[in-house]
Amino acid sequence: MAILTANNQSLTEITSLPSVVTTGSMVLLATETASSSDTLDFTSGIDDTYDEYVFKFIDIHVSAEPTQFSFNGSIDSGDNYNVSKTTTCFSAYHDEADTATNVDYRTAEDVQGTGFQMFQQNWGTDNDQNGAGTIHLFKPSSTTFVKHFIARSSNYHNADYAIDVFVAGYFNTTSAIDAIQFKMSSGTIDAGTIKMYGVV
Image (cartoon, rainbow, N blue to C red; front, side):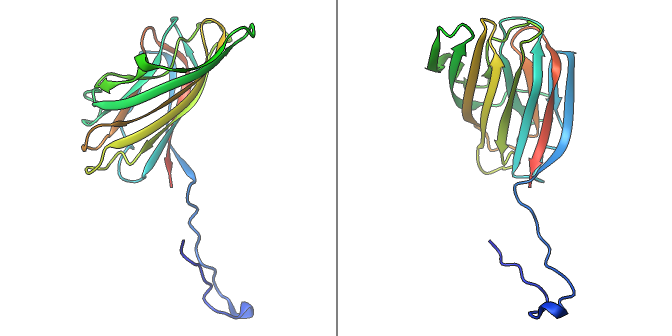
């Protein structure tokens, strides 16, 4: 960490204070709002400006059940969403009736290939059922290293469970990731908002 100093050591003679850059603050870059949307795409603003990008999902509601919320990356500005990836996934759940709880390694949700990565599972369509969460994408503009991501989300399972899903992995490419797409495995994104931030 750099040491910030004033321009004069005598307090009575200081004419200016050192500038302060607040690291870790988030800058809102884009907002996508669903309305019976097949996909929500972020095709601009993912570049070398920031080393970390954060996507926040707020009150996502689905049109079909059960369905999985998933994402994939692009290296060609969104022409194709088929980037190779290696991932791992586990979840914790508890049902409303207080009869079932578990922590579960989700081998079926691990991806070794170009498919979409699930990060919220088995949603319901009831009016009170929705989901929320966060994905962190690190250094997507790198042309030297793979691009790591971590995701954590909570959604209302179609069988009336609270389910907490954890996903981590990396886009296995040294090409820059410049677009991200979100979609359901079936049906549409009925409602909700996704916000993309850059982290200073």
